[in-house]
Image (cartoon, rainbow, N blue to C red; front, side, top):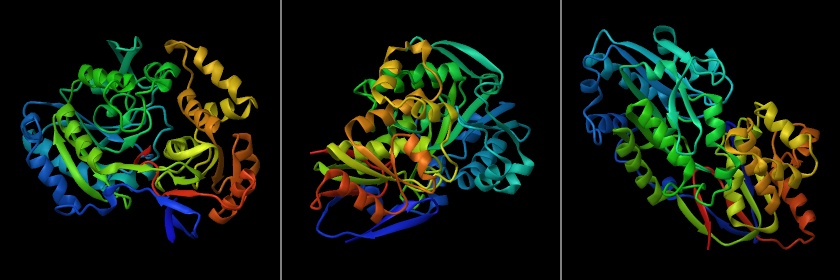
Amino acid sequence: MNVEFPYGKQRLSYEFGAELKQVLISKLEAYVPQAGEEALVDMAMEKPIGSQPLWELAKGKNKVVIIASDHTRPVPSRIIMPRMLTEIRKGNPQADITILIATGCHRGTTVEELEAKFGKKIVSEEKIVVHDCDRSPLVNLGTLPSGGRCYVNRLAVEADLLVAEGFIEPHFFAGFSGGRKSVLPGIAGRTTVLANHCSEFIDHPKARTGSLDGNPIHADMLWAAKQAKLSYIVNVVLNGEKKVIHAVAGDTFAAHKAGTDFLSGLCGAQGELTDIVITTNGGYPLDQNVYQAAKGMTAGEAVVKDGGVIIMLAQSADGIGGDHFYHQLADEPDMEKTMALFRSRGREETVPDQWQTQVLLRVLSRARVIYVSDLEDALVRKLHMIPAHSIGEALAQAKALLGKEAVTVTAIPDGIGVVVNAK
């Protein structure tokens, strides 16, 4: 059986034999949307959930901020943003609109990336500010349920109307992306993100893919969005081709709930434990670096046997993805020692990138990881993983590590687009 896996902006294919036990994909790939991408967004905005239309909300609102995702997210902003701008100006032609790029703790989005995301017209004509969690002016909105301080970009707090675009997908510790996540971590200060992403919460059994009820990370994010008065969202659901198959708009919390309910009914997949799991980060832009690739590995973690092998396909054209992340992995050969250090830190003592490192170390405590990428082999080895540059090479290495030729294999073409559970 031939299986294709997204890898950067291309696809890797492999012809499997009898070793292939299962291919885990969400029902999203078979879902036939009721309309085209633009029409789906139009329909959602015409019938907002729990809210007046955006143009009605914009009446009398002079300072309007639209939170938009950054370069690491495949949000179809070329479709969503023009419609949001048009509706706002329909309600108030004189509105002073700022597009605020929600980078969280990521690097700043470049002009080239903004143009690829929005198109040159919006970049040249609209006011765009890239959030910087360390340097942007921030306002303290109070204390999160977790006990951390909630600092949010001043532009958003001082807006007469705060709205956001985004997309909803399974998230490896927030349950799902989208909605409230535009504020925290999107436009929050670093200390706020660190408190929310503390080791205690990352370890919490409810802080997992597809889980919202009882998830302490989600609870913080909800609180921050309410305090920031995020009033309206346009969120979409994408398939493996990054095409819009569903859209929701309206009240931040009601619309997001409708979107996650829709997605939950389609993205679940149950599988048996196997010796080897091959997974991805869904291709570009989410597999730009190793930091982001930890997300796709958690899908493999769910169905790999203890002591098995996860083969992670992530081109990583942008490198590691963070100096802190790199040094937390590369500077200490004893992974258990690093994990113990993280768990000893209180919520206010979290350091940058600790959460991502913690997740990767958790995966590595269950299985060995062979990392198929364009990175140099020595660099991958420093991160406690085994380098490879093709699926065939990685499978041969996995069989050698397991000490047997007869193995069972699971293929997960999109490791971040599916909620995987073991039977």
